[in-house]
Image (tube, rainbow, N blue to C red):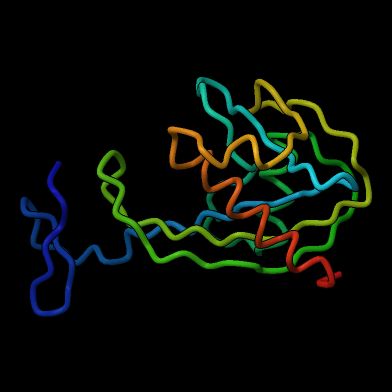
Length: 157
């Protein structure tokens, strides 16, 4: 499918005349740092790269509910947590899904640091974010970037 075109300020698919600029996804991602400054990462089911846990905000969900759901699904988070926005990225067009996605990155401080793979995760570890600094994969390099931002904002909580 081709990228939608803007016509008079509205985004339309080439094969459709309907307005679809609402095809926008907010992706909420959680940076969780332990006392050693290592970041929690997950390999989601059927993926072979690391990422910080998180996912899409579903219709009608609050940010807290979406973070709690995604963290439970991917890293089996149980219990309460605090969170603060540390970064909002500009939207990107995702060809594979024919929509725009904006990542909102949160520093998350859970009351419980016991993690294991959830239903949507294959592997979960805390790792030194520097290990991702020179990764060939853009999403793994982002882990380093996000962890640096979170570490620089330690006084958030």
